[in-house]
Image (cartoon, each protein chain N blue to C red):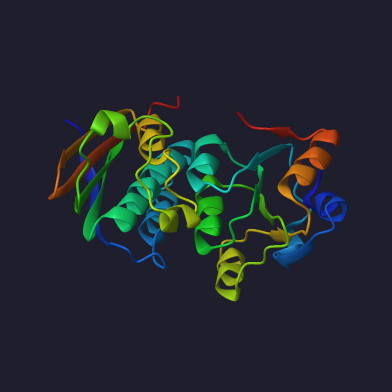
Length: 114
Length: 145
């Protein structure tokens, strides 16, 4: 599924790198703990988190995920968005909660990493 | 004896959360420019980042040294900090001594040291309570085929 399809499904607003939404993802990694993301992501996954600080984008860059979805209506500040633009990481924000996001994406065939 | 191709040390400032991770991001760029393959770069940078976060969270200051040879990448992380009283316990997944402030940053869930060990081919910790901790990690360049 492309990031653009995910954006529509989860009713997201895109805060960075809208031109990168053609990328296809098949796996998802979710956590508010950045070490958990680093432990499980293998690269190119969709990362879903409620943590909106600069470490979330640094972790996304180091784990080499395809994009970051911030859930529960949380929004990162400008510094974080600028950093994501610099690292070419799309940021999507949605009001949905983590549980609903995972259920919707799982129903569409996306899988978690383990 | 492996030929040393690069040795560079970086200072890490304890408790400076705004800059936390900058050293590791810099190492990623260095390894990418040296055309180190993606899998080994990723393993190295995860070890560096978790190590750097530990220094930022717990120590007053620290140094991360990157050493590249034709056979492997080594990271040496030295800090002046509280030390680790029980290293065996600290290496268990889920064990954590982190504060709420650290957890709010997305770290301190007891995965940092296990992550570092998992991504290293050789991994050692030496620590003295009240003085500091020294971590050594080696990533073999042929480990991923």
